[in-house]
Length: 237
Image 1 (cartoon, rainbow, N blue to C red):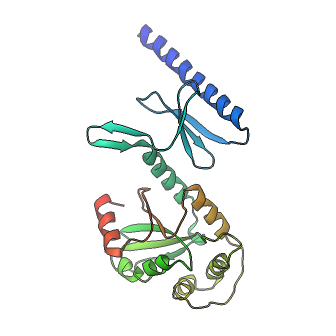
Image 2 (image 1 turned 135 degrees about the horizontal axis):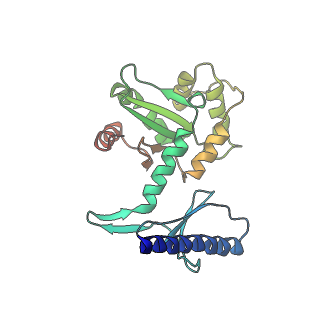
Image 3 (image 1 turned 90 degrees about the vertical axis):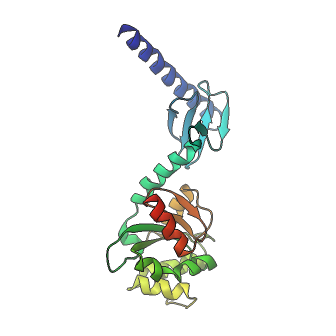
């Protein structure tokens, strides 16, 4: 028992020392880099450094070597992407912070079996194609929750259109009309379109549509509704 306590203390000091050295090394390079957390990756010699921007780095305990990219573990079932497991957890947490009142939500009339978060742009062709299949998803019990990601930025025409949708009295009707290419009346109100766009960037979204499933998996790009349903049935999300 005594040796266990001594070993635990030594390991704890090593971890704390590693965190301090890594933090000092990063801030020494650029003091503007904001570190969210530094944690030892279980059963490995690496520390995972999470930045406020959402990026992840991996470092040795002295902060001498850094790797930017995915960290894989070779397990019994093959390669395990440890980085994506962490990102999945982040997506679930951050997506859960979205307020229903700020989204455009299409809910099935009957039981909701799955919820699908879609970061979308009004003018994106594949976003429109996905929306044209929304009735099929609703019939299968899939709730589609739209969040804003105007690809051209917050000063763009797409941003203005999304604000008009959010500020209309019937958001679902306005969204459908806008995605069909119809010009809807300009509306303005207090909204979180910019916050959703910024959240999308933190999640690593670069294009639309980007789909986020309930388990935190992310799918960039369009996927036909039957394939979407098959994926959700297989993963339970």
